[in-house]
Each structure stands twice: as structure tokens, then as C-alpha cells.
Length: 89
Image 1 (cartoon, rainbow, N blue to C red):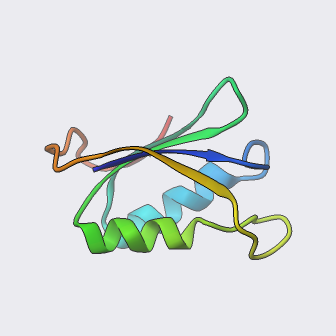
Image 2 (cartoon, helix red, strand yellow):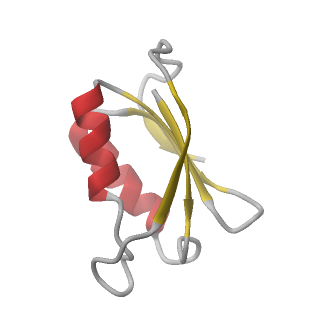
């Protein structure tokens, strides 16, 4: 499980749907949601290789093409899955 905060131009540009599409394609469970501070919160459950692939896939600025964003991992653990699917909150 990872919990990450994604900073940058990530609200109002379809970023949550972008993350959702990648997560579903990889079979990852969890959620993505906007936060009041302008960041996006991601909680994702899956095997480490798929979580790493998800983080690489979403580390772009979808308006301006590939660009490093600030993805801050705030928690990483072997915690059990709390979700049956991946959702946008």
C-alpha cells in the first residue's frame, strides 16, 4: 500500500481520471481524491511492481506533456487492502 500526495497543476485538468485509468488498467485498488490545499491524494493497494509502475505512469503533467511533478510518498506499508476496486472520491 502506498499513500501519496501529488503536487503541481493537478486539479481541474482531469488528473484524477488520468490516475484512475492507469490504476484500473494495472488492477490496483484504492482511491484518488482532490485535497483542499490543491494537491491530489492517492491511496493504492497492489503488489510493489505494479505500484511502482503506477507511480511512473502518473508522474507527468497532462497539460504540457512529460514533466516531473512532486509526488510525495507519505506512507508505504504491507497493509491489507481496504477497497474492492479503485475509485475517484
